[in-house]
Image: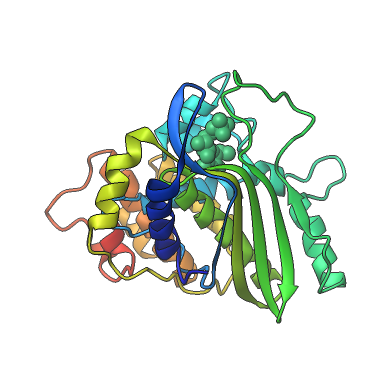
Length: 307
Ligand code: 5HM
């Protein structure tokens, strides 16, 4: 059990380098532990600030937006994380790891998996049936497909009046995948807690294969050797303003947001601060950041040290 994703990832990297078994699949060498379990008792400490990992918080917010927007569009997600292009067969959509689409898409029954598990827990608080499936067993599974969902299921459990989550993955990359997976799934845990008016409980994570790729061994050694910062804790979600957040994210991504508008957003601070980070990311990516003070809008932003 760990207090934060920082502590969990640090332990994990040490364990993999010291005790991992050499495994080669799809032509790539890894060190692996099978299976690997961990739990995080404060899921709001979901931002990896490990010194040496240089995690991109804005990109994680972009990926969160992509999931919440129920999207499988490649162009959307690659505007934050270009590596997703290797996961798309047709260079248009993502078919396996489009978790948001699988979770929130309403489908013919007009009820999404999210709607169903929320209803189950509202009707029967301590139900064991609140499970979201992300791994499609009817789909093709072979080594030539660029993207087969790494996450099998998410289970929500209300225990001790808090919402716990159990994340079950078949495969997890400890350097690249894990911090993004933890960020999104712990956010979903919080969203479920918000919907049920409860607090977040424990985040449990299981990976059939937890591994580190050979190209990351040096980075992992460095991270382990570095002095580490305190973990960063996000505040609790106070309002569900997802629709407004997503509309504004789209506006930022398409280059239509102005400085005046970002300063006067009529939205709870929780969301405003995240949108400011996305705006900063847009400006930086498009080389609009200057030293002449155009970053004033970030002045009171608690995340500014992360970007
Ligand atoms: O051979 P395999 O399908 O397991 O390769 C996918 C790679 O992406 C693995 O290293 C897996 O751990 C990583 N991955 C991850 O860590 C992929 C996804 C996308 O579903 C994810 N986390 N969410």
